[in-house]
Structure formats: structure tokens, C-alpha cells
Length: 205
Image (tube, rainbow, N blue to C red):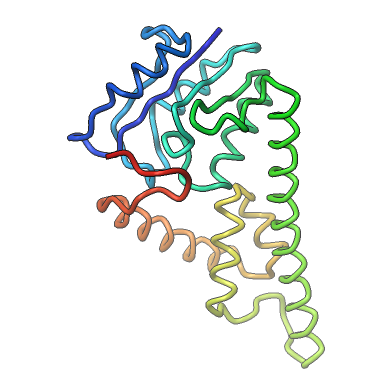
């Protein structure tokens, strides 16, 4: 079954063009999930509903990647979730990402591998930093929360790493991790009130 997803960033932006292109690609209007919400919002109700209702064999189609994802990592997580539910994903404007084809599946696998590689590098840098601190005589498993450590905690959480694992990998205490993540959520909520543009594709006019 062909499923469509369309999103406009602001209420004043038209979503009709996306609906027309999805229909031309073979997606019935009744099977298109649509919403008007900025792409920086982590909570996109219709996107979440679409993923929850996805059935094995379904193919999710979007007009362009910027309509479904906030960043490359966000895109990979969404496509991976769809894949784990037995579905496929394709973008009309970025035809290279079509997991219904062997070529598209290969490209997605490569990008997913690079994302995991980056995550492993973050973990390795964190462990190296802790070893260096120990070598200098610093005791205890809770190093001072420096800006780079705050960035590491935020990055791991954005990759949906569980808090227990973040604590284990960074050595930062749970209470400190929770404070960092609380501040991050507050900052993202404030930023979501202003349209900042998309990280992938071109923003819709």
C-alpha cells in the first residue's frame, strides 16, 4: 500500500503542491498524512501516527526529504523505524533514496553505517577523555561538566541513546545528565517558535 506524508512549516504555507505530487505518484488522498508544523519540532503527531499505523509492505512516499526530517540523523532514524516495521521509504525529489530498489537500500545502508560510525567515535572520544583525566589523577566517575561534555550528552540523546547508557559512556552523573537534557529541551522548544529552515533539501516557499 502506498502511504504519503506531507508537511508545511507554517500555517500560511500551502500544502496543496505536495498533495498534488503525491497523488500523481499514485498515492490516494485518503492515504496521505498531512500536518502544518515546523520541522524543528520533535513531536509531529501525524508523522508519529503514520509510523504507528504502518503495515508490513507499505511504502511511505514524500515529495522531498525536508518534509519528513529535521536532519540527516533524524531521517535515518525515521527510515530505519519504517524499515523495522517491514515498510519502505521513497522521496520523489531525491530519487536516490528509494528503499524499494536494491540501489536505494544500499545507499541507505551506507548512510546508516556512517551514522553508527559517528556515534562510536563519540563514545570512543568520551572514553579516551575519561582515561586521560584518570591519568592526571582525577578521581571519581563524575568529571566536571565542560561544554564539550554537554555537547556529547546532547548528541547521544538526539541519537536516542538511553540515559543509563549516556551515564555509563560519559561518566556524567544521572542528575547532571537530566539537567543537561532539560536545558536542551527548553532550548529546542524556544527555537521551535521561530522557523529556522531545514537541514536537508530546500525549504518550501
